[in-house]
Image (tube, rainbow, N blue to C red; front, side):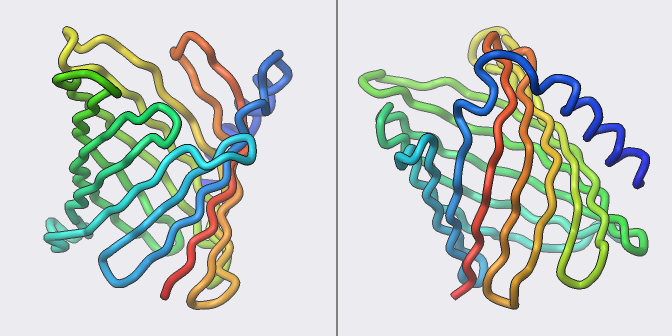
Length: 195
C-alpha cells in the first residue's frame, strides 16, 4: 500500500514541472447532511460550479459497501448543466480501503437542444493512518458515449483527508490530468462541512 502511494507520488512529481501547471488550482466546499450533499467549486478564486447530490439505495453486496448517487451540476460561467448517476463499491481490508465507481452523466451545453452521454470509471485505494488521517490515490478516465466512445482523458489524484472533528474535514490533493490535450497538474482543496 505504501509502495503504491509512493509510486503515484513520484509519477506526479516527475510531471509537475511543465508550463501551465498550477494555473487552475481549485477549492471545493461541500455541505453534507445525511444522504444529501451541496457543493460549490472554484478555480482561480472564482466560483465555477454548483452541485447537489443524493445517495440512494445503500446496500451491501459480497461483503462490499455499495450505493447509487444521483447528482446535478451547473456550470456558472459556461451555463452547462449535467445530470449524473454514480454506482460506487468499496471494501475494507484492515486499514486499507479499495474502491471504485462508474458514473454515467448527461451533459447539456449552453444553448444546445440536446446533450452528450459520458461514462467515467474510477478506481482507487485509501490507507487509514489513524482515526483522523486517511491517505488516498485514485485514477479516472472519461469517454464520450454519444460520439463513438471518443476518449476525453482522465486524471490521477493523490491526497489526504484530515478530519478536524466529526463535522469538518479538509482534503488537500495533487491532481494530474492526462490524455486531455491540455494535460496539467493542479492543487485541490476540498472542505467538507457536516450539518
